[in-house]
Image (tube, rainbow, N blue to C red; front, side, top):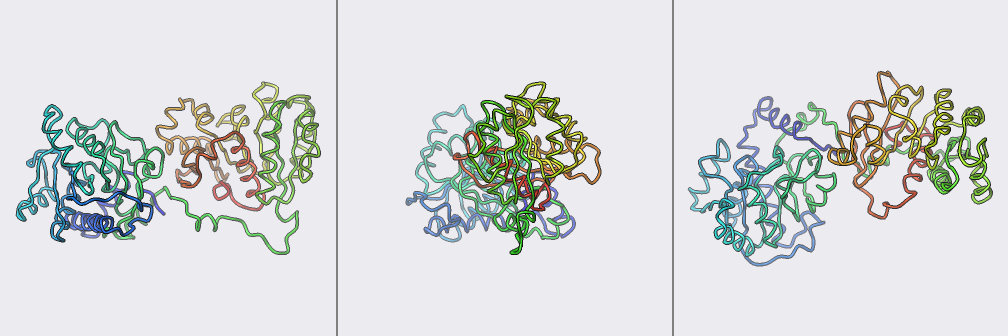
Length: 492
């Protein structure tokens, strides 16, 4: 499923109007109708979407809190439909009526013609009137947040911020139109304040930031509502981000022929471990086995080999020069082991010693096998080295490792995760033509990017994965898929 950015959504709107002759008023009419339909389903107890089950419901009006732009216009249309369907509606406008232009102004006028009063959201200085607004919102059956759309950027104006706080403090179920007001549609980062929605009705296509934390947690259950933007416009725009689904991932998996044998499914060489980090080497090796690799060899320093020998009989453990960590003298032996393998998984538990960095540079400079670079492999090397690697490569950093690779702070990485993973993958590809790269940014809502800037969002997982060792298992699993014939992006 495509996930759109702010610029892509603007381009889709523009294509719909300029290329397909669909006026803004028609798109707004359909958007408001779809929002009103979901409101009715929720109030009637029908699950729309299913994850919204359990919303507390009570008698009372629907409160629509609208802003001055097209998102507010969508809310005004929804209010009109709800009124025409016999539901009590209260409308609050966080702008002066004269500030509305175009389609929003026309829909405000239609409410006036129907006798539906529209009350102003007071300025923050009017404490008593703000208290009255909060009281009215607290008596609503449901609040529709139509304050800000995809183009909004922090900080919010004082009046809009007061409206958002009033919505959040009302203690009533909230349905957001397109995305919660104050949420950055590209990065998933919230303004202060930002609406906390129970349900978000997103229009045409989900927005990228809705599927990135903390934005995903602020959207509640998500319902995708169609509006008449043609599929041809979406195809022409070449949207670059996708939400992964089970069906799509199933198509990525390499085939497992019934007559296959251990040679059919590839040989993974795991280069990992130092004294004190034998577990990382073991977990990466077991991840490769569980991922379906036919053979797994673990190259590790001697003491690590002694600790693991016989513990996992399926793994072929090969002790290498270096008692407690890899040293440069091990490069020739590991390169020889790599010659017999199909894929290398490099990095878990290596440590960060200069001797190990020299060893790693010598080994990889001789090879062109598919490579998974993880953990200390990412700390010992840089993106320019990876750009010069002769074979396909998958990088699997967590935010701290990504920050080091890009030379920025962890906060900057987390503030724009899509931008960070795209930048890292582009730099890891360098100017190479035809050399495959993929970069994974681990964390809540893991991201995968390719050098062209295409992005995939993994919506699965939980905080159960927030424990030491899961990244090592992931590196082995990706290596196993590469060994079975998957390309870097599908494997990642």
